[in-house]
Image 1 (tube, helix red, strand yellow):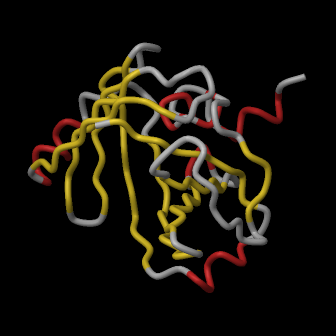
Image 2 (spheres, rainbow, N blue to C red):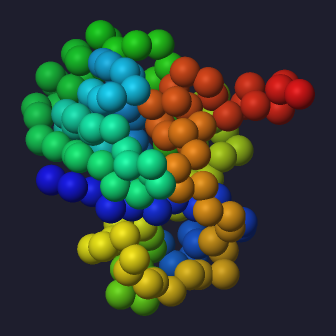
Length: 159
């Protein structure tokens, strides 16, 4: 399956008042190779195994395969993951004809809030809520696989 997605910083917490759902997410990576990532995720009470391919040059499109797995298996697989477990709360916010998924990170990535929107085509237009900030689609620093290696809290130490 091909995933078409755009990613944005979030400018305020105003999105929370419009959230239709929020779920705790814990995830780790079995593989963070630039050509592919293999992710284990626990979202709420469900486990998932996801494989993602390399993004196109714009960062909008890539192959994604995801399968629901047993929660106990997901918990065990998390113990095999590379260092840098990601913890976040995911909010679902209906807006226009789309649903934005907003991730508020905890732990080493606390302070980072990202919004994603999945699209049917790369040139699809969509309404942008006023809490949406700068677009970071294609900036690999904001990929969860990279945040697990170089957490957001360490960025301010860079020159």
